[in-house]
Length: 161
Length: 161
DNA sequence: CAAAATAAGTCAACATGTCTGACCTTAAAT
DNA sequence: ATTTAAGGTCAGACATGTTGACTTATTTTG
Image (tube, rainbow over all chains, first blue to last red; front, top):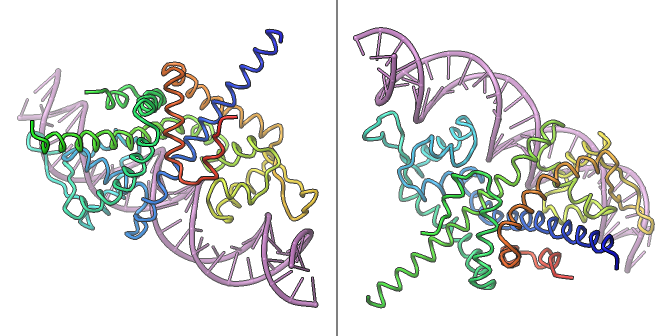
């Protein structure tokens, strides 16, 4: 048919493809978080607690301000969940050696156990998806996901070593 | 080296790779929603309103129970955001023709305009990521994301036509 | 050394989103 | 005529996030 029609078709396909991507993000994220959310509810915790436990586990000894930089929430928002986690013995703080203003965060044994339970669920979900999709698809997934991230510093976290 | 050591290395690589996937989902979703969240705040709306506007726009004339099935939240949770959107003239409802108990939802002109603004931001973000990653990567992204989704009915939404 | 900057913590008030539970209305199906 | 389904509503609770203002301890800088 005419160039006009095929141009319109291309635009339609493009719009449909992009909307599917929006929905993939919605459905995948919804299902990715729902089982951990149920586990967290057993402790009276929410997704915010999970994020704190996850990143403290991932970067043991990180400071409060580093954590704020990752989560991109306010100090007051973090304060509530972090103090609950400390009070209830999932996280400990110690002063930094060179800079004693800094509070370096670490998981306790109890925190490590909870982190393992939560992330094991998510790792298995990813592992299954990766296995079914194959190595080439995994590389494509990574490239697209990194492209969706705005912050250049955050993108750097995913450079291949 | 020994089989033991290379086995441990493989496990380590696997764990690292799976943790990176967890973080990709966190960072990508965080950045994917942050600009629309700012736009929504201009209207006093939140992400829940966005999801309702998005899916009503996508499936014009869908019913409340179909929407609940997509969002997987309770009727009471939906009620608050949906009634705000109807009161403020972003969405209209009409009774179903064959089953008059059903309330079929549609965007108004005003709703279409807001939907377009919100999803345009997300479509452009995806379009950039897709363009930079290339067609093969896009296919891999889709396969992995579909694999992360639990619900078989939701996976079906993404079958190639 | 004194002043400024930084890291962290705290208090208060508020908006939003979600939940459970109970109950009601209307319409369709048996 | 009764039961079931779709939808609406009220009340109460909790989790997560925000802004703003202020404090303390410590380090850096002029």
